[in-house]
Length: 138
Ligand code: CMP
Image (cartoon, rainbow, N blue to C red; front, side):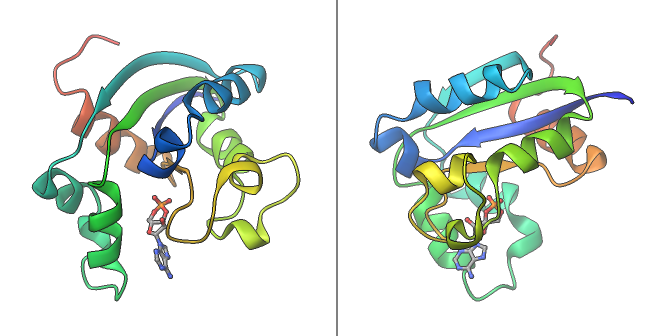
């Protein structure tokens, strides 16, 4: 299996609810290595740029509003098959469908305020890591 990197975001709802530590603990306990980390409050252009693939979706405005509501923690995770392993750990986008023991089952409220983001492919992970860690040596 290939060593991969993936981008994780602890979203504003989870930061507001003091879940940063609990979520990072779940990530580390799952055996994923944290290779880089920043806390930042996304600007509207940053959030719109990050989610540009969704700009035609009806929920885009709501998504940008939510992601700029408060600070987030972005991190780069590394490990064998990291993209899929982190997606499995997050659980389904809609927490109502998320499996027991997943981050979203424990900490997400609904499909909009769903606690975490993870890249959906190794190619997108490269783009997303570069978006938040441009020029960083990780
Ligand atoms: P994320 O994995 O960050 O990628 C896109 C985000 O859009 C997703 O998590 C959700 O937070 C959000 N999203 C997806 N579908 C909906 C929806 N139907 N209503 C509101 N937000 C959504």
